Length: 97
Image (cartoon, rainbow, N blue to C red; front, side):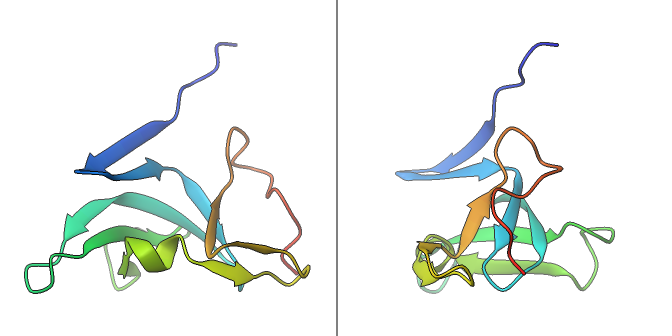
């Protein structure tokens, strides 16, 4: 089976992978794209919970800087707040709980 390349969206220097991500507090989220705040100009990540329809009340926006911010995960290792599941979306890269 051929390997599928990751899909990225960009906004100027900002770059985001469209993929499933694990959150440091648990939960799996699907990125939808990037947006720009009309008031501040901040680049925002648009994402939703991996479960559900993705366009209801579970659609979220977070500053890209906060998305990539380093936080302490439950295993004691500092990583980005959200970490991509990479090539195998069925298996998280580390045990969250």
